[in-house]
Length: 371
Image (cartoon, rainbow, N blue to C red; front, side, top):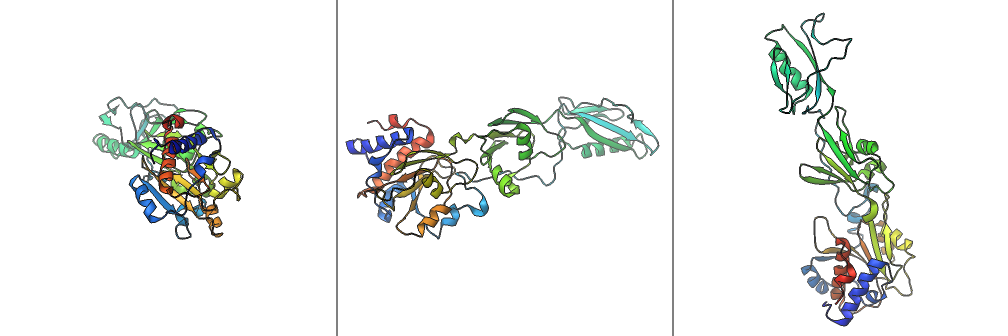
């Protein structure tokens, strides 16, 4: 649909205004034919618009499986290492004690706090009779083995104990919707995501369903809320040195509703919400004015910069009402309710998708659609 046409420009402009300002969108609501035919879908597919008719055959893909919230991005937490072991790093202060026999201690004093060696900028520390020992990246168990091997030249069957006296090397950063942003020092006690956020403190608007863990150039989206609510252990991963944790606010954890219904933005909150709840919260469908088949949900699939999946609900079938109660909403979904079918639905929905795209990308909708 070209916006050079005055009628099409008017539709686009009102679509933009409705999404931006929360006004009623009667102009765009008028005139859509449902369900979409295969012929009508072809030009939409060329624009990256994939129409999906929701039925009993596919609702499980979009439902609240085992109570876990369905998100606009697939949860992909990093895998835990087999066994967590603290890697000694630059700046850590060690405590090293050595015995030659059960009765004789070669170094260290059990009744006094001894200042141990500090790992220098080269990742090494000095120890008598051994010289410089590389410690960075090694565990205390590995360092102990090195010392025992080298000291055996001077001491018969040396027994060595190594631990970290002061942890200084490894930190993780936590930012976003938390009470205390900044760096948190890691120790030899394993720290999981929930432990970190308990220490940093969460805010009322913290979105625990979409916590980011940035690690080695990759970003993982973790649904910590599913661990809190349902015990999904895979969604509470270990925090490792160098991680950055970003807790988003719920500002963009919302859906947009417009058309033949009360228009506005709806915050999803931390609990999963289905399509029926969203529509009911906006006053319900006006059975007199609304086309019972005209309910669509626009959603941008994970990893895509353009195009949408457009979920279609044919409410002329009473059993479909059950499907709307099973269809879970995702952040930045756009719900469109319409009436009065017109012949060229595919052109119109393509134009609506352009307005929806502007919402998702945060552009100024009115300016974008001003002819």
